[in-house]
Image (cartoon, rainbow, N blue to C red; front, side):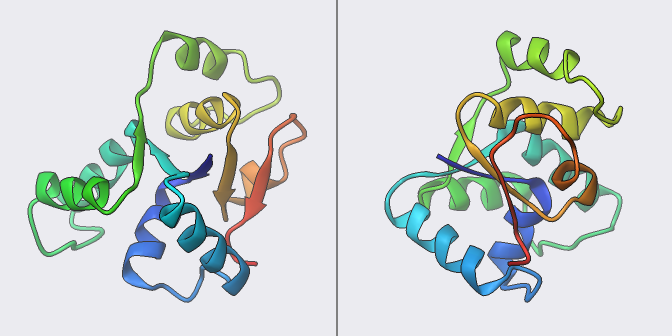
Amino acid sequence: MILLDTHVVLWSRVGDPRVGPGCGRLIERALREARLATSAFSFWEIAMLHEKGRIDLGHDMRAWRTRLLEDGLVEIPVDGDIAIRANGLTGFHADPADRLIVATALGGHTLVTADERILSWSGRLDRLDARR
């Protein structure tokens, strides 16, 4: 499964050029094959950004989420195993959202992100730079 970091979910939906051509093709292929996912926690992050006026999705967050899921994006819930993995990330920064998303990816997924702190982390994580 290809797991999108929160910003990559947003970038991919609005056609942001920061998603590199290779990752763009990977995302489209994974979506067609029902292998594209995001953490449920990413919807919390996006809702917070929307509420604070940092992003404008132009509509109701629930409707936006529903449309993504209807288009084939898989939502991975945050459960106790993910929470425990997030707590045990050695040498990782303290941001709880990043910790939960990385812990989700550690459940057997490849994380697509442009977050330099995640990309440079020394832990064992399958990850791809979204800008490539």
